[in-house]
Image (cartoon, rainbow, N blue to C red; front, top):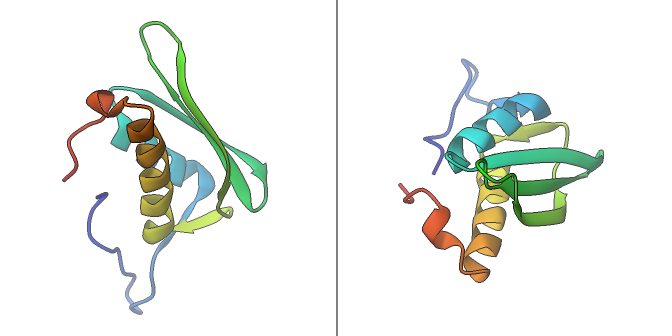
Length: 98
């Protein structure tokens, strides 16, 4: 979805800071805007916004996360938001899955 697993030189999964993870998720949902904020140290609120109108298309709160996310965590969050968009019949706005 976002690419293959990223491994460091010791073979451990790379973790991304919350701001970097948000950048990756934002790039996935382009041309829509994606905004994620921490609700708590263990959950986030994600919003998908139509950039031309500023209309909020979807808000999902309480998605489990942390301040350091693995690629798998990021893919899980993207899948959660994507699934909710599809449930609202907004999948036509999503980029094609790769």
